[in-house]
Amino acid sequence: MSRPVAGSSLRTTLGLPRPANRFVPQEASA
Image 1 (cartoon, rainbow, N blue to C red):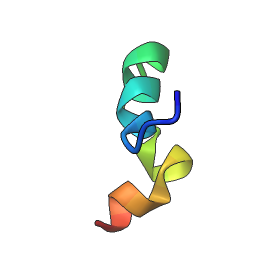
Image 2 (image 1 turned 90 degrees about the vertical axis):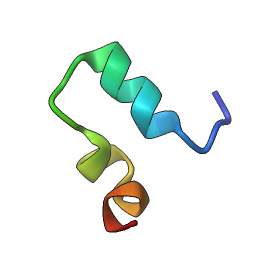
Image 3 (image 1 turned 135 degrees about the horizontal axis):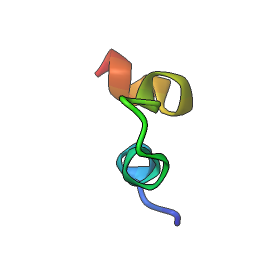
Image 4 (image 1 turned 120 degrees about the vertical axis):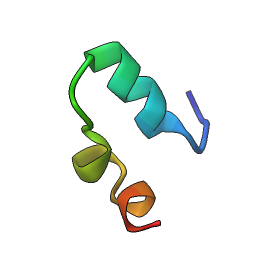
């Protein structure tokens, strides 16, 4: 679970459109 791409895993697990913007703001900024 200590992976830099946790947002991607969460998105697949939750099945949401893209929670990365709220879970992983760093990825959204990048």
